[in-house]
Structure formats: structure tokens, C-alpha cells
Image (cartoon, rainbow, N blue to C red; front, side, top):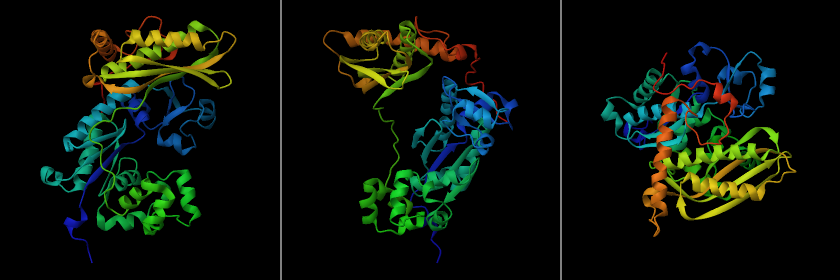
Length: 413
């Protein structure tokens, strides 16, 4: 007995996932590298943070130290990460996705969910046709490939997009759920990591079909509410809705290795100034305020020391943040120690629009200062990162030598 078409799609969710996103972004502006292995390195060029499929095939993994990667693949191209450029490519991709449905969740820089309910009448195509349209349009206008999965729940849609990578489309209506789950592994389920997998294996749950055929009360006892949500979603019942409005971040951090082990106080402060400037710029451009910041210094032996300060009023004022950072630095720094990394973390984050003005005009003064950082950010986006920077901020020798390519300089193959 077949499932009627209207029952095949009680809900329609698409998951769009960019393939090898950071590496694909680099191939957009360096098309001569297409067809050869490419690895993207962390901000201090210490380890691999992304790679093309051919680099992955020889065993290079995310987080692998560069020296180890070069042993496996000495002739690959190793590039420093340019997260600003990747963000611009991401914005372009999501602007295209919004054409297909206004109800979108930006899940990460390179993946998102679309609510496709009602779009078949709008686009005069079935969901498979819409998915292929999305894939082709992103490739034509941005130059990267994406994989698209469409199903009746969020979890199934995400599993579907992973099933046919790269540059593929997988459609899983209600009538195909069982067949699809028989073809994937339990470890392919988003939300079932190593620890949960081990827990399930101990009670003889080894496959997705084992999972959905287990009594829900058993799943609840083993994995709690998260497990019951997965159980429902994998059976085709929507239990996890899309977050259509961006949630306020709980924290915002700017941290990095200093690229050396040093006890030089001025060097450490220059790194902290750079981190503070970047954090203040992000707070300003996203119209956010913070009520608490903390800094940490990581020592040579990888232990760390930290300090925090609470502000009387929420702020994104660079000078207010920097004053507190340098005061904490004075408290933490020991001339007899050697340090390898540092960073700043903002907490208690609120929207600037919702902030209550203070009696003494401090927040109004902060708002005037914010316009300076907005202008500085605009200039850096137009002419390249680091064109304008706060005095005393550390300048990366690597990034200073690298040419920055700014959107809309996008090449499509």
C-alpha cells in the first residue's frame, strides 16, 4: 500500500550544507587550484581547520598539526584562513537561500535550514526540483557547491544532505523514511556522538532502525529529552522546530595562540589590544552590549590564569573594554613566566536596542564612540583587513603579507 502524496509531506524542511566550505571559498578566488588538494590552516598556521576531499582521502583530518599533514601530503597547497572572506561568501549564499523561503535558520557559517511548506505552488516544482534549483543557483552565483537534503523533519533533512555529498540532492518523504534509515549508520544521526553511541550500543541499539524500534521510554531513560526528540524526528514526527530568529550569543570570544612563547609584556598586551579591538568591532556592528568581560593568559605548560570584571552599565565601548583588559593584565602578568596564548571573552550579552539608558549619559557617550568602529569596519571591509587598526594592536606577519579579496569579487565556474 502506497502513501498518498499529501501524507508524504506533512511537513517539508530542507537542509543546505556547503561542501568543504573554507576550502571551496579559496577555490573561488584561486580557480587555478581546482583539482589539486588544498588545506586551510588556523589563524597562526598551526593546524588544519578545513581541507578538500582529495586531502581528506589521504588521511588529513581537521585539527591535524601542519607538520603531520605535510608528511602525508607535502605537495598540497596550504593556505592561511581568511575568515572575513568566508563570512562574505556565506552572506551571499544565505541571501540566495532566502529567495526560496523567507523562513530560514542560519545554523552555522556554511549550513542552514529552510521551511519549504507551501513553496511547491510558489515555484511550480516538486521539492526535488526546488532542491536542484537551489544547488545550481548557489554554484552559478557564488562558485561553491552545496548538498541539499529535504525531508519531513529537521534531523532527517540534515541526514539527507550528508547522504549524497558533495553537490548532491537527497529527498526523503514519509514513505521513504524506513528505506533511508536502513541505508545509513547510527553514527550518521546528528545528535548521536561517540558517548551516546557507546551508551546505545551497550543495550544492543546499533542501527537507526534499532533506535526507532526501541520503546520511547527506554530512549528517554538512556538519553533524556534530547533522545526522545531524536526518536520522534527519525520516525517522521517534527519535534525540533527551526529557529527563525537569531539567538543572542551567550558569550563572544577573541582568542589565539601568539605564535611564540614569550614573557614580553608589551607583546602580550599588543595581542590583547588586537583581540579587544576585534571584539569591540563585532559588538558594535551587531549592535550588542556586554556587562562582563574576562581575559586569560595561557602559560608555556598550557595551564592558564584568568580574571573578569563586571561593568556598571552594559557597553561595547572599546576604550572602556581596553582599560579593564589592561587592568586585568597587570593583575595576572608575572615577569618570571612564559606565555603562549591569550584572549578576551564577553559575557552577559544584550541587544543595544533594548538597553535602558543610564542617568549619567555613559551609554549615550558609548553610542557616539561606536560610530567610529562602524566606520573603521566599513573601511576594512572595502580595502582589506588591517587597513585601519587600533594603535598598539598586534599585526600578524602572515596576514599582513596576504592579499585580501573582497566580495563581490566572486568567480563562478
